[in-house]
Structures are given as structure tokens and as C-alpha cells.
Amino acid sequence: MMRALCLLIIVLTLFSCSENESEKKETSFNKMEELVNELEAPDEINNLGKETEKIFTAYYDIFSATLKSKNYPVLNGFIHPEYGCYIIESGGALPSLIKVYDFSKYKNQHNKTTFFDRAFIKANQQLEYDSLPKVICDKEVYDRQGCFAQEVNPLLESQIWNYVGFNQKEIHVIESTAKTVGMTVVNTSNYTYYFSKIEGKWHITFVDLRVPCSA
Image (cartoon, rainbow, N blue to C red; front, top):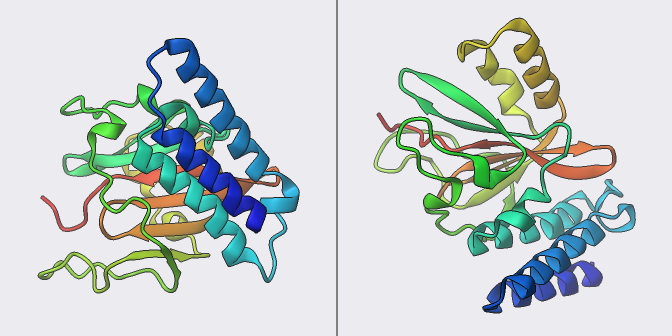
């Protein structure tokens, strides 16, 4: 665990460095990707059991630090190269799903904003392992405020892929990916994230950018 925390400190230090030359930037990005890969090694991240919360917290700390830093090259390292990551957004009356392998390639279908055009408020807020907050649409969107993680898969229950106009082959692929989700994180200050353990490693497989209760 101490090794994971040390890696996090190194990553954050690299994020804070300002490089003017493109070659130096590329070198820094490569180093950060190596650190992420090292943190995901089986002896650090994937020995799930009694230490599940501590292990996933170490992984999520790097993920959330990357969100806060708005660093595409490192963030892309959290995507499985075959499964990809589905971004869920509002598509008018119905939701829409966009599959990406590179977050920098994502653009909102309506206003063409990019992934990091969004404000990831309190992106690195500390995780609380508890039941996920309920949407109440009152003075606050949720009945509790914070960043909550739970080993549940509400995405699979929602069957959202049946409402986006995909063909049966596409639906099968999305549903198969959704079945791998093993941890859901709801940050009430920004968005909902779904993580899957694939081939012994954690990956981000769905990001729900929709804001509950909004028109």
C-alpha cells in the first residue's frame, strides 16, 4: 500500500511540472503511463479480498488525480484496448452512448464540447464505501453529498443500451461489457463512473456524464 501511495505522489509531482519542449512533455507522459501500469500489477491492485477497498482506493486515487490534471495520455491508460470505454450522455429524450479508446477523441454530439471541457468539480474527493446515494431531485440532486463507491452494477439493471437505437450486435457487445462492471463510483459533484476488472486489471468501462434531474 505504501508503494501505491508513493507512486501516487510521483504521479502528482509529474502533473505539476511545466514542460515547454514537446519531447520533454512526451517523456513525462510516458513515465506517468509506466507508473499507472506498474500500479496495476497483480501484486498491488488485483489481489481482491479483504483488502478490496484499500486496493481500489489506491487505483482510484490515480484515476481521479488524472481527471483533475486533465491529462489525456495518462487517462487513456485506464481504458482496456479491446473493450474501450462508453461515454453516456443526454441525447434529447433518450440517452446516447459513444465508445472511445482515446478520451481526446470524444466530442459531445450536440455542442461538440470535449471531455475536459466539462468541469470535474471535486474530482479527487475521498472515496466513501457505502451504498450509492439516491437521486431525489429536491433542493439537492442526491440525498447525500460526496464520492461513494459500492460493489454493485446498477448499469446492468438499467439496460440503457436497449434505448439508444443500436442493432442487436452492438447491443450484445455493450451488454457484455456492462456485465464486467464490478465497482460503481458516484461523485455527486460531477459524474458516475463504472469500473471493470478485466484480465486481472481494473479499467474504466463506462462514464455517465448525464446530470440527474436536469432537463
